[in-house]
Length: 336
Ligand code: NAD
Ligand code: WQD
Image (cartoon, rainbow, N blue to C red; front, side, top):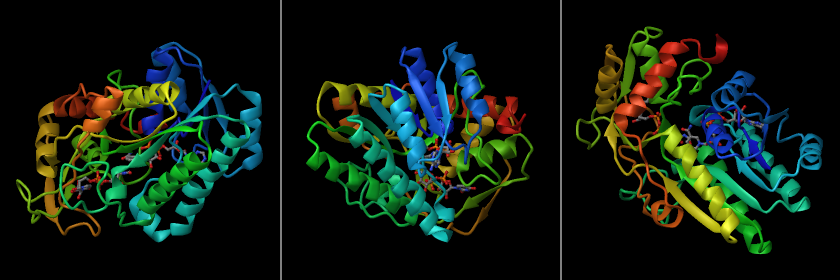
């Protein structure tokens, strides 16, 4: 059985669909701090399969112990964590406690119960401002904010644990910019309040919930001056987790993998692609650069492709169409 921490969230819920469709038994642990149990109901609706759910916090050591005592867990996919860059600057201790201490508790429970396989959600944010693109896994790690530093600290904990526990098998996945939604339009990204990320904001403008997009700077050294990122469809990303999990079962792994497409798109290219996919207008204005933003970031995912057989199937049009379907059918997210 697979323990999926943070499974009610955006990437977790999409990964659950793939896991259940591949006949895996799953128990989800989530404190619902940034998600809703409705996502899990919809995962079961899409797949016609059942999953177990425990509402608990990774900081609650007793609850964690109970989960490991109650279910025959043999591997863990660890999504649970806080992920808002700005909030991490304002509340760094909250981020170190939730992400680093939460993972520490999880690893202690895994060690105690001899659960040896793990897939961890890291982020391209560990690279900070890259020296060159496309970014390879061997690039310098220099995160520029507390959120990114929690990811790097966790990576280092995993590497140290591997050094002392030979049978521990771990895949560290560095995601680039996940967007899109399941093609059913039943699950998707449901940010609380004003979205921090580009696609949810664009989608809310297109649906008429917000007046216009603020484009953060048009004076970067890029194709049109706006920031360039490597957007990856969340379903392609979810599939990458199954490949990584399989790899942790084949060998005693310490694998670090970029998961991106290798393509970079600018903010304005995204706006235009979204307008086309949604047949709607996305008014925008150019404003100041957002502090801490970088100009260009995209992946070299050659290692994941070679070692995991990872390949993306969905391009930008599908990413925008699927985001739009989710947004249009669920204007209030899981709230309705
Ligand atoms: P999300 O917020 O939708 O999902 C995270 C889930 O973890 C939520 O359901 C939340 O309730 C839960 N959670 C948080 N702290 C917890 C705790 N202490 N105990 C139990 N549950 C807890 O985020 P997501 O976009 O699905 O991201 C999943 C993971 O991937 C995160 O670790 C995130 O840092 C990482 N990541 C996300 C992105 C992105 O752009 N979405 C990019 C790179 C990496
Ligand atoms: C993308 C582009 C913005 C919003 C963040 C985290 C990273 C990772 C993914 C978790 C940039 C521009 C955005 C808006 C805009 N998360 N933009 N107007 O900054 O690449 O990465 O999310 O690990 O750690 O830092 O993603 O979606 O916020 O921005 O112009 O309202 O869109 O400047 O060029 P980012 P994003």
